Length: 470
Ligand code: MN
Ligand code: MN
Image 1 (cartoon, rainbow, N blue to C red):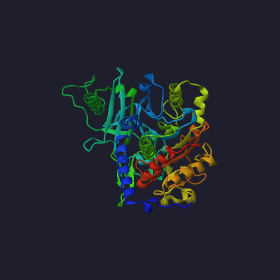
Image 2 (cartoon, helix red, strand yellow):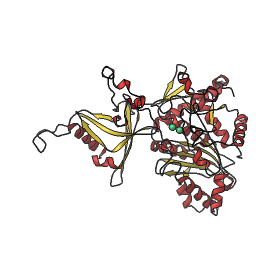
Image 3 (cartoon, rainbow, N blue to C red):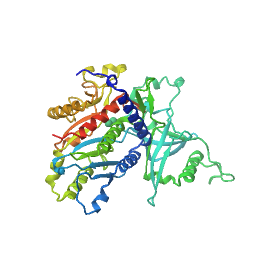
Image 4 (cartoon, protein in one colour):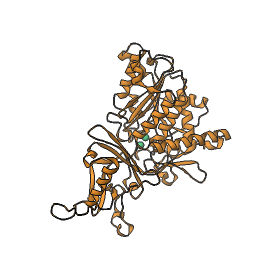
């Protein structure tokens, strides 16, 4: 299959639609820099379209019926949305599933310390990162601190123009001759990824420490005072916090032609946004449609909010129960009869690193929606491998809707690899394939996508949701 550039065929109307969609996409990225923030945005967008929380629906007496629109939230970090169609749930659903967590640095549980008059927050990086990319760039701090009394303090520092930002230092080139000889994976060590948060000592007139000298850590004391005064939190409250350090700043147009978007977290929020947008657009569906926006994909989909959690299955069990009578078999049938697009990104072909890609089996920026039949590494190990019959079905669905797409692998054989949530869903016996947007410099603090691919992928998801299933 020859890769073509989809921009060439766009009409004036399509160019306008593409630009408008990408404007909304940038707003989505700016509003959702963590999974918790994404969940808030997703809920408000869904509620605007008439979706209600499943627990509210369950309270009522009415049975589940066509046109019902519900969502269920899991621990504020993942969300599943349903638009009920005409058949019983055991006939299966059309499922879109993306993840809303992205690589970043998480603040440790005992993070705050002072060294040589500099205050730091100690971090542990999350997901696959080239650590050297995260130094000397402006960083912001997002997340929650939950106090013992159950109240939650929300932090969002570093995004507004007059907010302070944070950073990780790096050694100046003049003294770096030894550092520059190290392997890329060791140039910046994981424990060196501590963010600098202050440099000014707290001065208390007339007050000295027990031994008559100044406070031992006056810069740290100043940070604690700011935290107390501005947010009402104590040092101990870090114990029950989830604070994420991410690149500061907004999503930007890239290129003189403004054809691309450069932004943090596009793996996988580009697919989360396009899936959500398509889902909310298809308000009247024949077949029940389901949208999964999950957490923890970047660390193996583990944990209560990851795709391997039973939350998804439990939610469907509740829906089937609300249909009339629940049975285990109906639940299994519903899952096995479903079709899914695992909405996740692929690595765009990079001419600067051509030797890492197989040109005939790579995805290209501007080439349209990308399908990955399989992922994995070293002989497809750990991969979902989508069924040929299913791919043929999808080809027809997309061709009929005139959506441009490409089919690609993630890089050359034996050069590395990756995984998505596809193999987890495949265990139910459903048809599932990875389908999403090609990303250049994936997992870097700033990742690049083509606006045309954002548009094509959204259109592809719409076509999929309206398809009859197989
Ligand atoms: Mn991903
Ligand atoms: Mn990833």
